[in-house]
Image 1 (tube, rainbow, N blue to C red):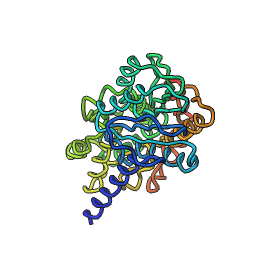
Image 2: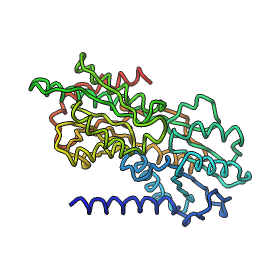
Image 3: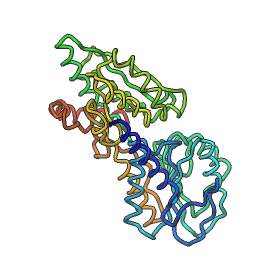
Image 4: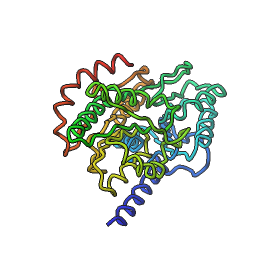
Length: 352
């Protein structure tokens, strides 16, 4: 029964690749760079994280937002989507776009990953935005003051509720005399975007279990930690014997953890990320939801209708742009989540 699942996964990945290379106005040229537009229609370019599409999470949720916008804005904008294989390839794409001559055609470049922020800073020092161009950068505070729009999604509040749930589960295990600790798996140590998720989980966990321990593990030293599912899968052999709950904040690498829980008999619980991932494993007790699809849709719609982007802002639990969604088999934790929700919202506001 495992072989059909692998075939289905391959088909889904191929489908994502086709979508990336086929914009609204037709398939992209296949060249390494970006050509000047040949129509007066506003142009939107979306650049995903390196190797990000097909993660069944954050990047696929972004893709959903783009596809929804395309359906509702048919022929109003030409949309081109790219999924570079590396930061270097992404830099070439952005440099080509910034180098295009000034024109009267409105153009928006969506940089859909904070992994690109250092590269964006370098490119913007070499080339300025012409009057017809705008740029939207995901998950950034824009501390260098670039003339671009940014936003952040705080995972603190939703992760706080996940931590409360994890601590409640482990406390139950402790009563039966078989309790172990919790583990947070992160892509890499240098990514400040995921720090609120780490902090929120720890704070929520200790709000319920003050004496509890939470361990941190990093999969890599750079962005490749987001595409290291095999490494995560291998590590699970040891982690499953040490921990009762794993909170994974590692993008596509999370799939290695979910795969292990599907294939091995274990009481270890884990969490889905970015979208409802309860269908991926019976051990996923809940998912940290990020409405990145809705956020992106609203930005694209505003730009298309006004030519400008909303001011930079932070989205979180209280506004409904993030949440902790319990899986159907774990609704018994509804009470603790409801009890701690207001506390999580307040704690998130204090940590923004």
